[in-house]
Image (cartoon, rainbow, N blue to C red):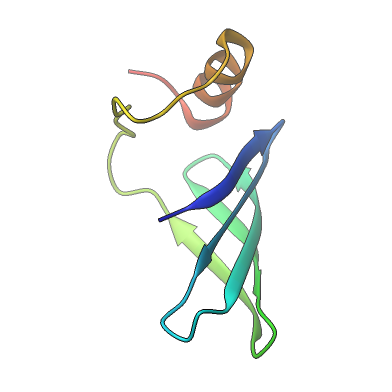
Length: 79
């Protein structure tokens, strides 16, 4: 389960617990259909690049203020 998910401007941050129970923190910059960033835990630090391959779908569990939703649509694109 993702935790501490935040999109501020073009910076996306989130964390999750891995199989060892360690928290892995991700931070990345959204640039079009790509995110360039880094992942860090107490054991690992690495960089990554992710590429969107389909349109993002909103899901019912997603909760955000009107401003957060508008910002996400602006950065990630809307339908």
